[in-house]
Figure 1 (cartoon, helix red, strand yellow):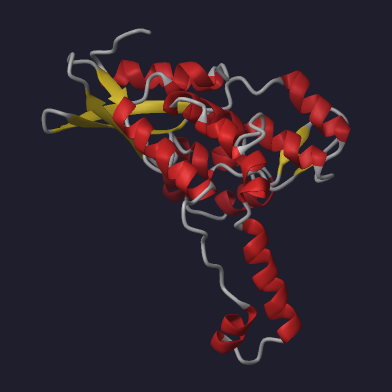
Figure 2 (cartoon, helix red, strand yellow; figure 1 turned 30 degrees about the vertical axis):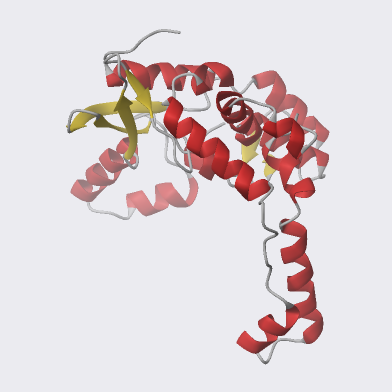
Length: 257
């Protein structure tokens, strides 16, 4: 594995690995201590040593006396269902068939499998499996490929002591991307100087921070806590086809796909 003495080079390598869907390579760039903590917390959440208590129907009714009991019982049943690791495991680890199989993996392997499970490709496949998108849409997306989905651009690095640094980045948006529909009408309604400001802010996106940690040998690795480069928060709720060749997402993160 390459050794990175420059946090910005490390960040770019991680983005390249994500865009290549090389989850093992991306996981290898993460600080091993934070990976171990992340994997342990995942296992504790999926298969807690002490059974997790869920809210009962009576407790729902206590907090909202106007709630029909049938609705409260439905909420309580859903809480129990979502707490069942046999249902949650396939969503986060599509190729792992049991909690025991997950426990047999190393922390880095768990992270790589988690990145795969949260990927845009896997989310799209799940939408197709549940009938949320057509098989034709899945075929078009698969043929188009998911490479390049993570258009992250590093803006710079800030040291935070000797061991920690922060890489500031945002999602790349093409400066010449055309405005259309309601957005174009809104832009045209603004004074010229406000139009310039709106265009400039559009291309800048919303900066995010990726934290890195210096290793004993002086190289750097990315830190992971509850998320990794925004992947944990990426959700696709549905995809519609404008025509047979152009799929568009209804709830894709940061304009990805």
